[in-house]
Length: 359
Image (cartoon, rainbow, N blue to C red; front, side):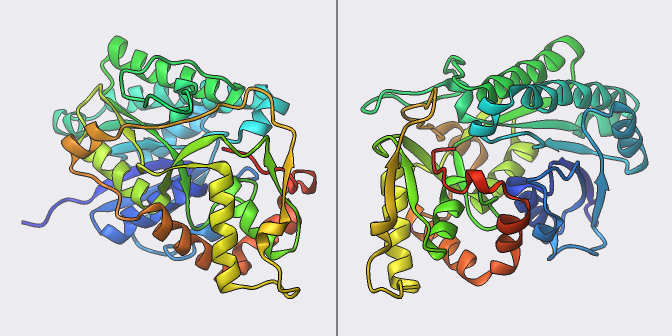
């Protein structure tokens, strides 16, 4: 008997992680993917070129704050599951303009939850049982850790430090409230810093690669001592599928790469990879482009995720090490200037091209 294809609505599917999820789910063959994206500055349909026109892929341009539009899409597309990734996600931008983060990450999530609840209530019993609202969040909701001890678990208290992480923490709480109050079947996941192909070039790793290739300085916040756990985006996409399909209703799952590195170590590793693959014309190392700049406000010291629960209950583990994933990433940016150069030159605020910091 042929297994029925499930329809998954992916919000923010034109973004970095969302597009990786769309590509992964369509390639797997077991899902019909409906991508819903507002196409703000970080949304790029070129990231979905490989699946454009696929019979199991559809795109709707819509805002998650528009509950009416969401309700119509849920009904007409006969959505079985929702994976919610749409969010404003850049810490520096949240410091400059926090209200946009409140609007999208908090108000938008509540609007989506309300539409999802109405949709779920209208399903038959079998589809209600199968339905999931998977909310994708970040380790930044937990605040920061000392440099020399501790890891974030699913039981860690919330201590957000930036407007971005505060808005994501609020959205997490609303998702849990919709489960406890209304019975909506939800699962949550909190991930560490992602990297990989199609990463918007205001973020640390792609920005360092692009700046280095363009012979620009590589400014690093403070002394570059801030520590992050890094996760290759395609490993994350596989983990998100596992959470959506195997996760227990009402539970949250931490997803990390077990790959802690200081920001300076990340930049130095990229420089070494570029020295080997694309040497500078003057014969010097890309390391000579590094410059230290004043730290940003509220810069968390260290994030570290314990992914044991996801590994044990979902059977998931990352396939890439930090070294192999970063090598794949550098190679991708070297080979795919068609994707990132137009963004950098036309849509990316040039004033930010000099800022390099942890995400």
